[in-house]
Amino acid sequence: MATLTLLGGAVFLIGWLPLRVRPGSYAVLVTKTGGVDGKCIAPGGFRWTAATLLPTNARLVQFSPVMAERRLDLAGELPSAGAYSEFMAGSPDFSYAVSARLIAAPRPEGLPELFSRWGVDDDGKLSAWLASEMDLAATDLKAAMQAAAAASADGSVDEAALAGLVASRHPLLDVRAVQAVSSRMPDMRLYEQARSLYASYMERFRASVEPALAAASAQAAGDQVRIDALKRYGELLSAYPALIDYLAIQAGLAPRQSSGK
Image 1 (cartoon, rainbow, N blue to C red):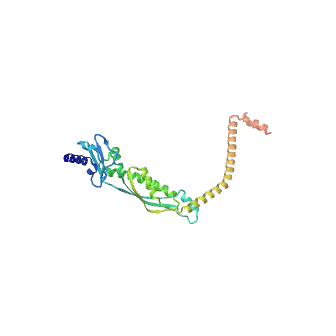
Image 2: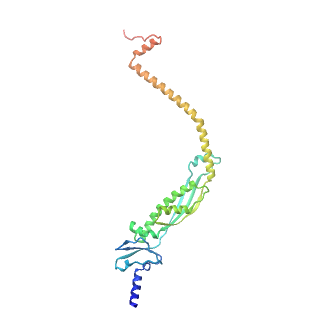
Image 3: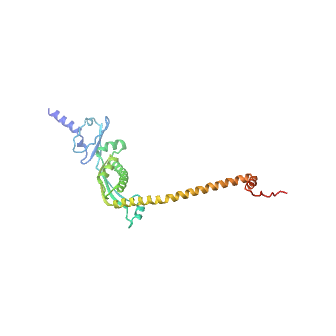
């Protein structure tokens, strides 16, 4: 009985996977019989499998926690800011500048996919993948920040919304935080006022100028028609010079003198 108990305990310990994982690390189970297990193994949890009972059948690919950070600096101006600024008294500044930090790590649940899809099987490759993915995430975050800056009414930065956007586009990243380090935004109420006044002014200007442009266009079209008609008459008379005498007689004028003897 004691022997069976010891044997059972040994079998249990052999199949208890968290005991094989380094403290603070994560692991992916790969077996010859089942391939890559889709569930990451975390220390301190309970995970038992019979796959480890077969010699050389199973191996654990272990990863140490790693985290990365990117600093983003964004500067620009709102659409047509230059025209609106010159139109307003005092030439208000409609530019913006935002600095933020992106902090993220690989999602432990995504380690099996990183292993099977991208061949990430050690800490060095995991760090390289994280650096590449963080660059892509930073590009997406910068575009989102630019759109948010143009749409913000009070100059605030919605850090949670930006973090959620990055996480949705990079599901293998565990986005820990998007933090606004500094933010300088224009007065959106003044910007909207300037845009409204500018649009109203341009509408009045267009209404006053369009009639003059239409008249000038009609005059130019009439002149072009007359020029084209005279050109065709000249070509006709050059081809048939006798018409000149005929037209002169019709007009009561003496025909041209013949140069012949």
